[in-house]
Image 1 (cartoon, one colour):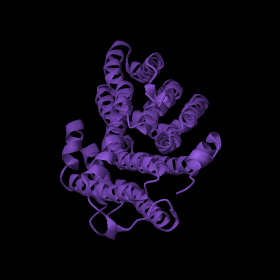
Image 2: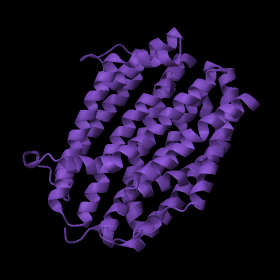
Image 3: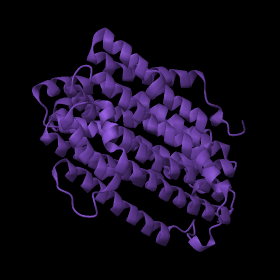
Length: 401
């Protein structure tokens, strides 16, 4: 507790060494999400559409887990910076309780609500049937035995992977994490810790769940054109997770670094790590853009497309790739604000880029110039959001304000 690398290590080295395993972990997560769709696509475009329509619920599950984790990281890191060991331990234990509570809610949704969720989106009985198979396994994991395969096989593999990752996470935290002592007998339930975690965590959950609202809205607009267009959007959304998961991994590290140095009152280190994270986020987006422009044929071909899906998909990927650079910078801004516990400001930025600007714009451009107007609305929304952020520089760059 006398010295912590977050206040002593050179900032660029600190960011890279902490971010590398997080980025790798997120990319692996993105990989098995893409593999889900690659396998399912061989059952036809309706199967791919069923998986795509499930994304809002999957994303809410991921967003809530991430939000709880982000809230724990921000509060715990601040206490580490303030050298308050008891509060560090209590924060971790209260976070685990929140995670267990959320799992129970997901389980109940999986048992009672999955079919109704699909029926709100489409009346195609095949898509509903495949979607119920897929999403029920994601939420419940079968019926205490090995379910039949088909579209259930992919989510079973996903859930098994998540369980293994959870067990490894518990093992490493219990045996290797020297900063936090996990003694459940010493837990003292206090609303103070739940409130501290939720102050950052809830805006984070809402922020990341914005993409669920966005996907739901975009899919409704695309269904006016064809189910094939929803399959194209589903394929794109799986592919773009590689770009944004890498960005999320990088900036998940930004939050505890900012929070720790805020507690330790190291303003210069905060400013430097924010600038570096912005530069790296833009670079990740640029790499994603280059890949989308150079390899759209190869990328969409991996999803066993029909001739119509292939034609729509190549054009969509080339247009949508342009939004990555601006999107990466906006994501960094959101995470930096969370490090200062300014969750509402972060939420506003996320709402602007994914809902408030994007959905009305997509509706207008879709009606005016066709389906390509929906794709172009992503770039316009990201650009407007970044310009807005530049003009209204967030005060977090000066932690004394």
